[in-house]
Image 1 (cartoon, rainbow, N blue to C red):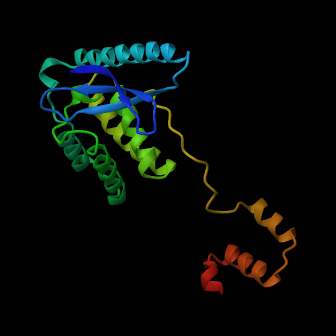
Image 2: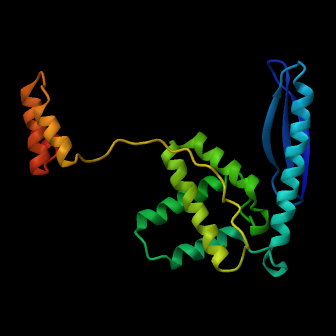
Image 3: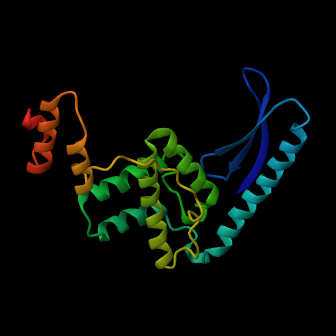
Length: 214
């Protein structure tokens, strides 16, 4: 596999630096790096891009050497399919795994092998997820993918998980229930519409949906 640093002219002017990942028989992959500003910082950005290119190539080679020779060509999606058949979990969980893999297939070949999965691909995958789904769903899908890699680690297919070290950026969500202290505070809080307040409190104590109370 070769990792080539390239420069592309932008339609609105300027240039962008990117990496071109090429391996015979596999679809090309690209990684955006920096947009050149046309000033004194360009030289520094080019040097940084060269360093990243060298790092990515070493990551790939390192991942390749860490795999036993007879396991380098094990197909990831076939392994994932067998992994799901062995799982004793709720169908919704399996559905989330399949959704995760469907997104992964957008940037990989259907014949993806374990020796092609490196840290760079994992970074591209989480970036794709952030662009396609909500932050929390992206984190959930990525963790499903990472769990398959963890299982393959236990099975001796890989010697380290290339998804380790990827920082996830989920968003804090509102709680789906109120604790006792919060309900007490709600009772003591004035509300312009007493009927709405009474209906909501009745829902809290009865378990009925607010729509049913209405």
